[in-house]
Amino acid sequence: MIMTRAEVERAASRIAGYVRRTPVAEAAPGLLLKLESLQHSGSFKVRGAFNRVLAAGTVPEAGVIAASGGNHGVAVAYAARALGVRAEIFVPEVCAPVKVAGLRALGAHVTQTGAIFADAYEASAKRAAETGALEIHAYDQADVVAGQGTLGLELLDQARGIGGVDTVLVAVGGGGLVAGVAAALSGEDGGPRVVAVEPERIPTLHEALARGGPVPVEVGGVGADALGATRAGRIAFDTARALGVDVVLVGEEAIVEARRELWRDHRVAAEHAGAAALAALRTGAYVPGPGERVAVVVCGGNTDPSTLA
Image 1 (tube, rainbow, N blue to C red):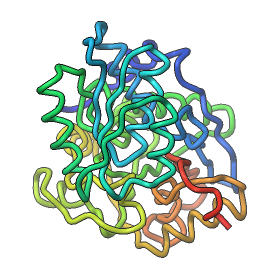
Image 2: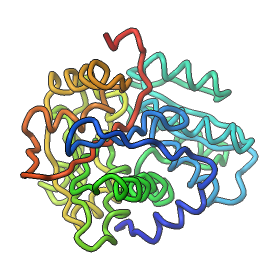
Image 3: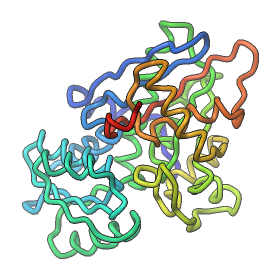
């Protein structure tokens, strides 16, 4: 399935009033930071969560259910609380304690199981079949991807007022965000290029495009709790291939240093996944051309502040 701009626009109308219009900061000449780390629940994921629940209309008595590395679960729990429905969230053992605490604080029933996201997803799917709860997939569901894409529409509108944007760098786990953003920007004549950024240790979309479809990859490294999908979503693969999304890879040390830079130089608190896109600029994985204006999506800020210094 290829995500379309029309679907993203419908999502934007549906979730208006439920999500924040997060700021764009000009961090340096030609470098914009889209601070989705300041979104409700601390990441872009709340956009897709709201869109999925609102598009469903009626929610079963069992409520909603999701598997997550952390951010998606927090977003689903936030949306569920805001809409007055029950949330049950399954997370793997690698889920950051701050995210588990956030889930419980939002009133979600939390089950921590399995070593990686795929294990938690298997458990949640089994539970959903038993209870009839509304499943909200972390990245490979049309309503979720369309909701994430609203970030792209918002960024485009904001950038017009400060000199425009030529390229948008987006971190990738399962690929829901990059597919949504690429779809949102696809309707622009000569619009911004979208570049996917992945950790070298979790190259889900890179491998999918190289091999002609989503394939399993090993998961590890500092971004595993948020970017730890074992394979790219089908929607992400189809959309990225159709819309010409390029993929670049970045190493562990580069991600760690980019996170430090965001805090040190800009006082932006980001988790490692939230800093991955910036790492592409700092390592030369992506090199802007003369005069090129680049927007980096800082996609999440659910991190322990004591680790930023």
